[in-house]
Image (cartoon, rainbow, N blue to C red):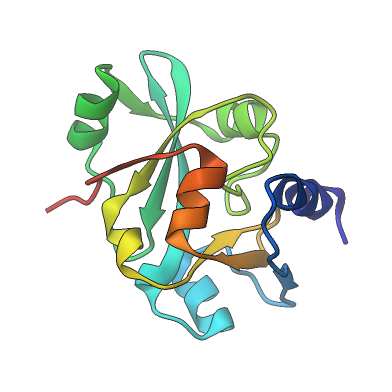
Length: 155
């Protein structure tokens, strides 16, 4: 198991979550790839997206079926929203784009959870690499990520 995945496992354990990490030979970098690998709908995949809110990194956990509405994120943060580049994502989270988990970050991040994820009994999130994922209930995800549930989907 890679060090990045081990960090996620440790964070899950520390949060009291029993979830098994699944590592695939193929990539789970995109929501479509992850859904095909685990055998679920694209909507059940959690996209961990880092944005800058007036320069401060924030995390949006978005349903794989949705595109994030930056105006909604701006309203929630009260700040101007811009997309974080790959270097900023790595600095803020300690993970590369395509494998960013919702927890175990290098720095504490204000986190928002897409309300659409709460309709599912189980969702799948990245586990630190572009080919590792773990299942979790939306309620547990909200709790361990310290997330605020809001509507993030673009119309």
